[in-house]
Image 1 (spheres, helix red, strand yellow):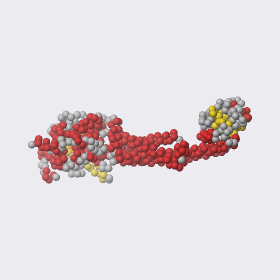
Image 2 (cartoon, rainbow over the protein chains, first blue to last red):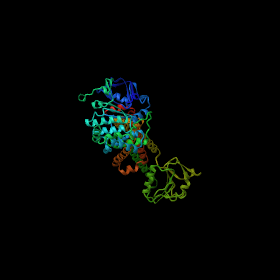
Image 3 (tube, each protein chain N blue to C red):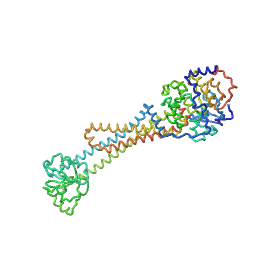
Image 4 (tube, helix red, strand yellow):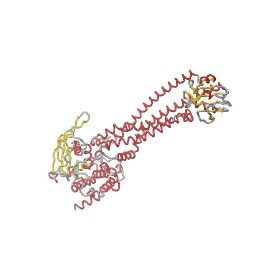
Length: 242
Length: 375
């Protein structure tokens, strides 16, 4: 891993939410560098702010103070067109709840990022079909998400994340809603993307198996970065983590 | 050993291990090192996605459409109702006046049947004059010569032959002056009686005054009554106008509220989808365009249905009340078309207007908050 090249960098990032009258600090000043081509797992109890941090890296949420740099540029100082370009071309998102467009078929869902990129319908459908085939859904491309199982939906979501060949995959508890076997397949797939295609993989997870294959593990608690460790220095007890 | 494991994984996932070849060529996973700008997509793309959304969500779209249909049908039925009522009222008024005028004609020459009559039309016939003419034609006079009009049962004549053998000359039409000399027109009449629809009409020819002196010129209306009638009609028209305006304003309000409510609902229940689209690189303007296209299509479809329903229902209702012949015969079709076109345009515009607010809200949302919402 080339530690000198940084793809994303968080600097003193805070995020404040208003819940009715109450003000909640979801993030309390996090600074972290994310290296190109690494597999980073973000750990933390629910409500720790890890999803919020995650959204910041993915240009989905704006920090209250602090900055996120992506590819050397201040992400939220960029105009909307550039932010959208980064979301479309550089980042592939995988969510726990899949977030498929329910009125589009599997094929159309996967083709959507290419359509938004400006590709022709034929080209987008051709490539989407190809990617769906590669995630093992070649026979169900005309189904609507409602007609697919959880595992199949997540594979559609993964195909969609990969279709524009992104540099970074952001996976927010990608195995959270899936059974162990399918979860394992997805972990395997993410790892292969990182090792074979130098894709940076960032996951938020509770899954011990995902920690096992990470390069680094960041622990977030109460909106702060508690620890940041190399995988080699962490002992993972698979039994007790579950 | 590791290879074997990988093969098993491949089999289990039905080939998901093939992700290795997901990139078109190996390791083109986006290596571009400068940040580009997202392209603005052509209208065609947005249109296609909108239409698809409407089609798949047909049930939900129909609910929204029905909101528009109800509003526009209400508006259109009020307009149609007013048009029918006015049409029927005008027809009745014209008939009443025609009856009155026919009585004057009879008072002058007795029963029209087997009599010789002449008709001169200056300008355009007014509705009650048309009625009067058909009454006279229906009464089968021996001869009915006419100048300035073409109508079945009326023999065309020249100014000099018009009066020949006639016992009365009817002068109708809305022009304030006649193009011919009265002397020429009354030439050869058995008795020089001129019945005028317009008391102040003047005639051509230097000998006009003398000619008028030698002919008996009477008005078809009793003057004072005519004025009173005119005033009453104007007042009624004004009242009807105010009533129509009030009803139209109310029905427009109903339409706006119905349409915005339906669209607001359809946007809020799709926040998640909007968040997802943004995540994948959709620009705010694209999201807004999607909703505006969708709402204009919904608006147009709903308005058309509303216009048809709003025209047919009052036609049936009044048709059963007054008889279909009266209603269809007295309906101003030009105005009806105009009301229909106007209502359709109003419905479509209102739908787009009503969608601007929710579409803007939706397009400005942070992707994260759109995704978080569980509406």
